[in-house]
Length: 413
Ligand SMILES: *Cc1c(COP(=O)(O)O)cnc(C)c1O
Image: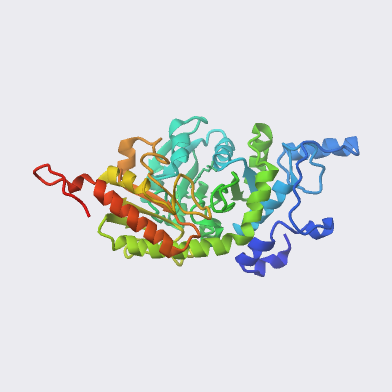
């Protein structure tokens, strides 16, 4: 990356990064290279290139040899993500879970104990809780990390904003407690537009690029941004295990980056407006969004995070039945998992994204059975509010709280 890029605004970098070699190639849009193999010109040179790739060395000038070793379309996307996360390097994978898997496989022998700050994304929680990859886990609240570290701890895993409650965790405070142990921050919810965890002392940033990075709900991917030494380990793991980001996926994800800033800013403004309206609605018990009074006691919005974000959650009065009624009555928003897309997605974590967790654990970590999570899209705020208001009416009509003490249903308006 050109050194002068350090002086450019991140919004400008999002438009231009990972495209440095295009002019020399004589093209302007991102080229898509679908080759699975590459012609060998010089056998000796090819052998040394192959050695370099399997050792995790990154050098776009080498012959890729075979697509599991390197792909230039993926390489450009990685370069752009490294710039946006202000990291030395980024390594891309088929999915966010593929990326987390590679991180866990790359932990050194004897350092395979992980401290997990709950709540995490449901499948990340499951991957750690199940010990599927030979790691062990100790769960900790953000202020219990120090006490959970042992001589075998190789990683602390955290998310902020947390999923699905959108609570903020102080990255620097966790890093201080972790001491020499690297801290991984899942930055999927915040995106590099709103937060750069490495600037607060984290060592590793993880993205499910499936979400806001791609932003159009049509490509899966995962990215780890970190120092070059750990990136080389990750590339070794990727060459050996093959959880590659397909070049078509990399093309779509990279194509999403130039609009990332405008999408996130617009979606955040609408999320803030909806949070304010929901908080004043009688059919809603509690709203979670960092913009609301009291939601950010540590003052992390404006210091750690450049805004309150695009995700919100709320507890519907009337319990899980009312929450489900709300979801089957939205018309502009789509009842679906995933997030960060141009369109609004709404879902019930206890039934879907966090179903894989123990019910008792869900309760303990604030994931109430009446909680609904919403990823705000680019629709007009007024249309989204009208949609929610009608769905909340339907939820109120279905709620058991409309049953009087004598057991008779009160007809609802
Ligand atoms: C979706 C998601 C993941 C997993 O990513 P996939 O691309 O679905 O594998 C991890 N963390 C968070 C916060 C997510 O939202």
